Structure formats: C-alpha cells, structure tokens
Image (cartoon, rainbow, N blue to C red; front, side):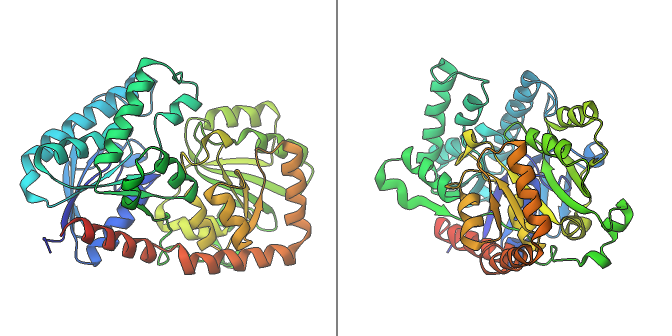
Length: 408
C-alpha cells in the first residue's frame, strides 16, 4: 500500500471550529492517531476572534496546516464572497501543484462549492485520486434560495461542473440517506459503488451529558430552574428559525427561555424580530469555546434542529449528533423522510415537525414540558444511538477504510 498520507483541502480548519471547520479538524486529529500524515490547505479564519492572529503555517497535533492567501470577504455581500471563494480555489491549486508529488491522494470538501474542481484538475492531469466529502449539493441550494434561476446559463454550467467533479472522484462521501439518493441521480449506475454513506459525528471524548445541577454554563447564564430551548450553530438562510421567535411570543408567559447560540446570515433578522416583539424570553449568545461544548449543549432541556424543506437532501444538520451526545431530546423542523427526520423517528430521541407554524411549535413545547418521563426516554435513546452509530471513532474508522481503498 502507498504511504498513508494525503492533502486535505477545506476552507475552514482549526482554530475556526465552526461548521465544517470543526468536523474537518476532529476528523484529521483522529486519522492522525490512526497513522495518517495530513497536510491541510485552508483559508485564514473568517469567524471568531482569532481571524487576524493565526500564523500562515503551523503544526497542530501532528497536522501540518497551510493557510493560503485570499481576497474578498466571506461574511460580506455575494460578490465579495464569490471573490473570496475564487481566490481560495486559485491559491490552493497553485500550492498543491508545487507539492503534488508529496501526496498519493487528496481529500476535498464542498466548501467552497467549486473546490472540487481542484480535485478534478489534478486527477485529470496527474492521476491524483481524490475523495470528495459532500456537505452541500450545488447549484440546487442557490437555486432554492432564489439567487439563481434553474434555467440560467450559470446554473446549467454549474450543474455540468458538479457532474464532472462527482464522476471523476475516486470516492464520494455523502452524509445522509436523502443526500445519497440525490447524488445517485447525478451519476450513471456503474459509478454508484463509489458512494460511501458516512454520517457526521460528535467527538465522544469531548461531548458527554453534564447534569443540570453541576452545569456551570446554566449557572453563569442565570437559567437554573428555567426550561431552556436551545438552538446552537449557524443561523443560515436554509434554517427555518423565524417561527421559533413567533412561538416565543406565544409562550412569553411561561417559564421558558429560547436560547440562540452562534452566528450567521439570519441572526440579525431574528434579533430584530425578538426586539420588535419585546421578548424577554429570547437570548442570543456568541459561539462558545469548544472546551465548553458539552456543558453548553447539556444546558438545554430541549434542542432545536432545523432545515427548510426546500433543502432536504441538499444538506444535513450535523449539529444533531452533538445534541444526542449530550443526552438532550430533539425537536426537529425537518422533513420526515430526511436523514435527520428518519433518525429521530427510528431512535425515538425527539419529535419531528415538518415546516411548522408557531402554534405547532408551541404545542410541541408543552409536550416536552409536561411529559418528563417521555422526555427522559428520548434523552436516553439519543445518547445510546449516538454511542452505537454516530461517534467520531465510528466515522474515522469508515474514512480510514475508504482512504486505504483509494490509496493502494
């Protein structure tokens, strides 16, 4: 077998522990423990206080990290974000070309969307195999957001590029059963064997239940004795969170706190809604340090997971697995046939509401508040399912096998 070494191309990486940055950092750490030598090509952090202070190169837990030059700003308007993504793609391509002989294989993520073109290019020119981790499927996402029309020249070209990237990949990793069906529809049947379903995960060493009476996060926030409904993570355009603010308005007389932890494109809109309604039962907090993840997630009595129905199969809310690791029951605003919708039902670790109204959310909240025995069963079931199927160890083992099969 060839040397256990590969280049990882991803926009976000340590210390930018949000979204794919957290998952790629955790996966690289665990694969390093399994004997892999990894060089990461990423951008400078766009989120968090570290964005302007990290060095261009560093070694983190045996992982070589190289941050490439970019222009534009991921957090600004669409042209600026597009410029950021394009400059990142060009910088990564130039650097990988210089180092191409050092790696028997490449791992590429779909963030930013065209990054797979680097894998396609190097596979075409130098027969360098690549494993593509599909977190989001484009251009369908931007079409469903209304940014592009389905019959525009840009959209049609993007569809073609996505097909090229998918077809050339030695291994395609999808993170949900719903996503797997969409990817299969883009490939000829003889290539379906390249698809590996590897769900995302939470790190079982880091995230464990923290009892409420020992939870420092609850104590610091002054929420002891309050039923806490928590949404933690990106508040993006694909997340149907507006009805939650409306539900908070309906339940303003109850002993309930709606806690939003994180950032994203919808955060300001949600804050404005809460301010307009003058809701004292809604709280917004910034991203919390990774070392506090377990106590933050465990601080919730109920956790929210959401994905607008238009994006079913195009993305998977992977925050779900950390919630399960913390032993917190889930209220999912997802389609029943989505990966997370199916999982919640199969494991009986929460309830699923498809595209809910504020009234439906309020009714569901009362179930969780007034039926503690049922909630306890959901909590136990979620934690058990996590340990059985959705740990970082399970995922790393699956990636280890896939990479060995690719690099031989």
